[in-house]
Image (cartoon, rainbow, N blue to C red; front, side, top):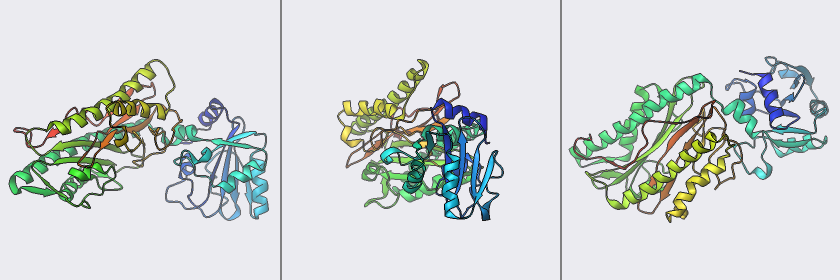
Length: 398
């Protein structure tokens, strides 16, 4: 729901004169969501919506799509020729010396960068500096409503129980037939999602042995995809309730097809689990002290543990990503590796914590989801933290 007062208060809080939202043919999904444009509406002409820190918003729309922003407050200018478009953009920026846009200096954060260089040049030609709207986007696109938070918790119940079903399926198939294919376990998880009215953009990862050492492994494509007794298995699964606006639950756990887990796996798991827990503790301690937290800081708290354990070179991705209506959402990521994520970890946002150590023989990742509520309390979702690798054939387990 578009809330002009809240948006203008945030523009002031972050020190901008205004926020210029621009879209062309769906190129800026972030702007479309803030503006309340339906996902399935594909407009064919450039549109602009300028929100000053104070005063009335201004719209700039093409004549053949002149009603595209009529649902929003503000005065409207209709253009036809390109000259009128450029003059209209200048008018939208009147009285501003800096404006927030979906832009990241040096493309340091590609998740925010949705505005093309030419549009940035046009804005700057009018003597207006462009700054990143990354934190504004978090507030008005990546922040969850109470309903979305409830839907995430509902999804987390079913993603959590999907692991029990997967481990049980592996155990029963190995006991009965001696082996099971990765793809069959994946299909069992997808059946679980369907039975609980969930949806996902892509099936889960099921990786055995060396396949688990590939963070973005595609199930069934490894040199050996058969799971047998004595094998290590990683499962990474993500899904959301099949309802409008629902947010994903995204979890990763590991198991061993045996009655007990060899020490070589446990050693690596314990380092990964400790790094995961260090991130949780950093968040809780920082918010308890009233501190501002940036995404890179959480990543570093996690990464320090793995580096101290001697496996820094084997942790080859960021600690976590924003979670929203897409599994990789548009809020702050937990990253000081691929980018230096300086956006704030804000209330009502959700993200993953998923450190990993990836070796040629196997890889361990432990993934949880974290939600920060409006009072900056830290919620870990998806059931109990995994504290040990699951012994899949242990008596009484499955």
